[in-house]
Length: 338
Ligand code: AQP
Image 1 (cartoon, helix red, strand yellow):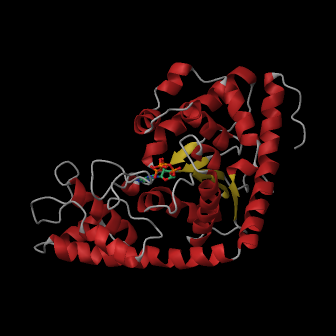
Image 2 (cartoon, rainbow, N blue to C red):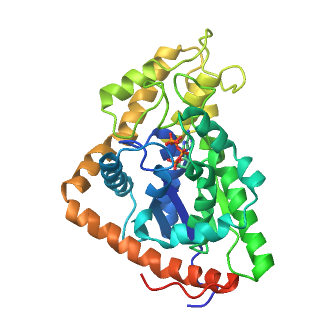
Image 3 (cartoon, protein in one colour):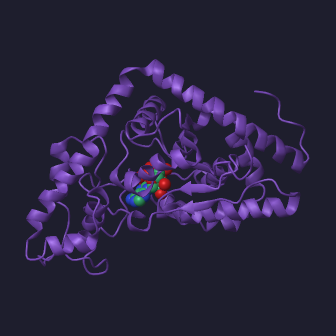
């Protein structure tokens, strides 16, 4: 195969920090992962090392990593087309993170807005939470990644990964590809349904604001019907003045395979009741099958673990080559075979 024939390399990850992913994860990132497995050599990772940067219960984390992998398969990842693995099974990630941490300025890491947001929500803040973006840079750079499909909240971390790649290459000679973010503008940030000025988040304190992929249809309908809108009764896109309705329009357009302009025309003169009722059905239809398929994958745990072990093995083949290169460049002995 010539260089021209080689598929670009893609990498992305998701934290197993809840029992289910949500609509923001899905529309912002995961939905893109599926077609990319056809056009790129894709590595997708359940990032459990990141999940322990905040308080966690070991048994719950272990189970959530499996449920996360099952959901990713359920929404269309094919282990014959992409490499799906759990981060802690590939020890090259923290090994490269140490090197990159020694290239990162303390002030540079302190500017990360996600650290500021997340540490404000914690009773105790760990060094791990502070260095999280450095581990994320290692995740990406290990695979000589060109494309990183993520939501908008990851843009700043991706910039750090790019800066670290360029800095390392300049100091030690060409070692890492410089990755590019792939962010879908329309669904870059899906907002919380109860507080539409905030992003939808797994750790959201408002249970009605977050639609989980594994919610029952009844729960989805309730959440959409109680979504915060405004005192007007006009289905119109205006992020500043109508953030709630604008967020619902973005979700509807993305899942209903239509445009915001068409929806505005379709619901002109109709109230929010009709609009929300129809949107609820669109959401139920789009994400409903994910629950059934997730249960099917979870019913055969041995097969699920086999898929993850195969993914980890493929990941290590690429990651160990990059790590060996970086070790040599900084003056280390070669890493011992693990
Ligand atoms: N609201 C969102 N809109 C669009 N994209 C989003 N993503 C997360 N929330 C939204 C994208 O989902 C991918 C995986 O995210 P993650 O779980 O690794 O971490 P996160 O961004 O911190 O997600 P949460 O839900 O807010 O998790 P917690 O509460 O555990 O911190 C990423 O590509 C992210 O951009």
